[in-house]
Length: 236
Image (cartoon, rainbow, N blue to C red; front, top):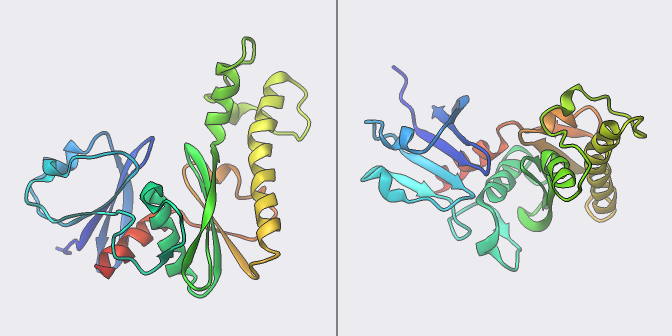
């Protein structure tokens, strides 16, 4: 039976994802309903956790658990004025990008509940980033803060995407998805002036809606947070 080195736990705003690592190889990522599923298991496999929410590590008892914080030992430098407010998922993704493409300028685009765009330069320095509403958040916000616009967040997959919509739903979809596309392309275009050979790495739950539509040469990073978490765990 293969021995599991560590279980990587990525706690986001919308889901809890765990990935087992066996001899440096990543297993399938699966979702949990809550942390108690992991805490109540009888094994003592080490855990490396990234969480955007406050969690109580006491639920894991004496288990070897490492929680990623801004001051955790890591192989990159954070050039950030308020590092204590920097999301651990962004830190892990930055480390993962630097692990995949060392000595390169890496732009990480994470398309989840919110969209984050972060830059790690070729000297392994986290230079800062951007946070803006994610795809579904944009759709629900337009419905919530108006009287008559519909919420298309549960049906946009069935709506045609055109730059100029021919119906209100198409216009909402174009504004949400097209706005993000233009935002990403604009950031890439602006940063490419100062950071040469910029790698753009796209990840997150909504990444597949954008991969074929972006102008930038991109790399899919479906496990980039997990790669970063594993690298930080090894760095400890």
